[in-house]
Image (cartoon, rainbow, N blue to C red; front, side, top):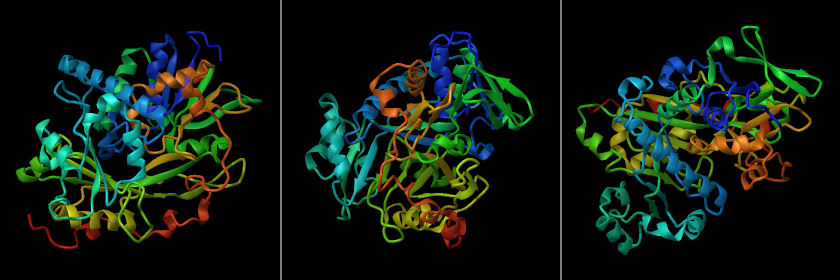
Length: 478
């Protein structure tokens, strides 16, 4: 659409999609940008333990470009890495009193500690990734079962512990995969807080807190004219962008058949400060990001589709299970009458199946973590699309309304760059990415689990919940 530079643009949602959009709108010269969110991110700093609920509010997220044959996402991830490097440099060169509260110049948002993708066999997705990685960086990919590449890794200064952190090769356990040294992790909540800081520096206005929660989209015929917030105030806009993650399908009914709100299961362990052995073992210098059997989970039978990260600077080790994308059909569509999956953020436990899978993996590979209490268990709510690709487009038959959602559990890494592509959509540019993200038909047959609906096995009401008691099962030996 044709927007003047001073057109009023409202973005609903201050997570990754909303922050990145606001930042790049400002870079393109738009001067009247307003971001609304029910979360007081200016007070809680996007920290989950301070009450932040969105998927973007997390300890850390994986940053990788391993996308099998999805080359546009691979290319965008590599570009994002360059921008993350620039953010690291920007923070390091900033006066301490100019940074937001949870950042200091010594904090690195992006840590290229390596990403170890393991399975009991060499997975097809890994074969495609290796085939499609640029030839000039093939030397950064170390096959763990190849003695030559293991020797090369040591020669390149990579600790042996990153090749075999679980001792599976030493114990002759079935294992294969690749240590990818282009990848690593970013500190998630701190990154969002920094992005908010950059947006404010660029002139973006934020309206944060419960009184600014979205109550309704204001529509006149087929035209969205603004929003109404929980405080009863109406806010006019020339363009409204909805970037509300797991809350999006309940706001825009047209997305119901393309998006589904699902959750992963996250377990967090804080290493005791006196356990210097564990602090060293799980440090990013010694320990990589890892995943196990990224496509090999059989419900309630085996161990697969799990991942974990090195400790944060605060000593937090995070693990997660995405083999089952849990749903919660507690809402009903106002327009179609269909049941909707909706985030339930008050639960302090996760499905027992997630605890079983992660506990079983730790028994075999990281038994020292079973000595420790869980700091928290969390359901992290995402929005999956029918094909795991983002949905960024104008809503059909509705004027002045854009949806930016469908992160499908892999959107965070694009925080510094995604907004550029979203602004291309807004400005009507025809690019490979605007075509990739556009509104699409619903495929027949399997649709990333969306075909199951409330009758599927993944719904929370069918799960037994578990927590720290099931994790430990014995008294602390510390």
